[in-house]
Image (cartoon, rainbow, N blue to C red; front, side, top):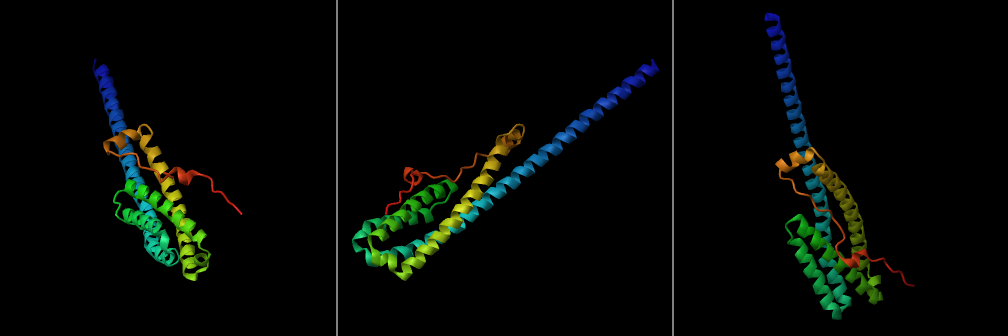
Length: 196
């Protein structure tokens, strides 16, 4: 009977040890998963701040470009006012979603500056306009690269957030699905037509 009690005690101790070990493993996994989400969220914020830098450069360049165009295209004032209005809306955007929406408006507005320039050959030959246009092209290229980086980071974040069992930790942290930086307008999705 003593032997039976000893074996029962050993089994109970082993069961308690296994349960304690499982709890420790689950806690370590939970802490690791939470820390991973914190890192991913920081990466998302850092990626969007990179976009913000290029958007600010772009928004600072637009008034100079518009002033240059104004000298050549006085009767295009409505187009130019719309460009400035889109720029001002973008500058005042606060949330990431508002910034993404405002960026789409500015992209469309920039295309209208290029269309105005096409109608005025003297403007296209102006050194100041050419310099500003080249700066804008560089910024657009850098912005495009930063958007791709942002979307890659967001994809990783959203995927990790939805995978089970990490989705439990994400739910406890109240993590929301992050928005991609996408083309919003049908105009931006159309194929570019080249005419000679």
